[in-house]
Image 1 (tube, rainbow, N blue to C red):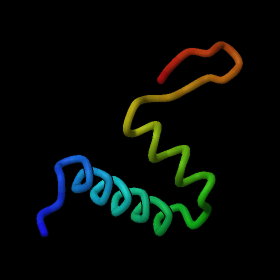
Image 2 (image 1 turned 180 degrees about the horizontal axis):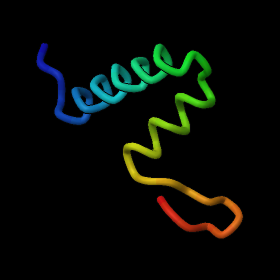
Image 3 (image 1 turned 30 degrees about the vertical axis):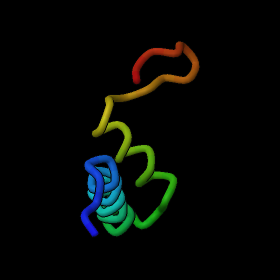
Image 4 (image 1 turned 180 degrees about the vertical axis):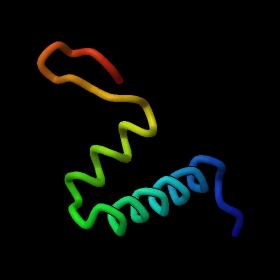
Length: 50
């Protein structure tokens, strides 16, 4: 069975995220860094970014 393009992208993103988890050892830090690298930094106080 061949995967749909969006399924392939999800698997690649998950593999990438797991690499961040291995690098940073903390899931919260890995999650923040992963998304910063994907879409840029986010400031929840000012709402700037992402």
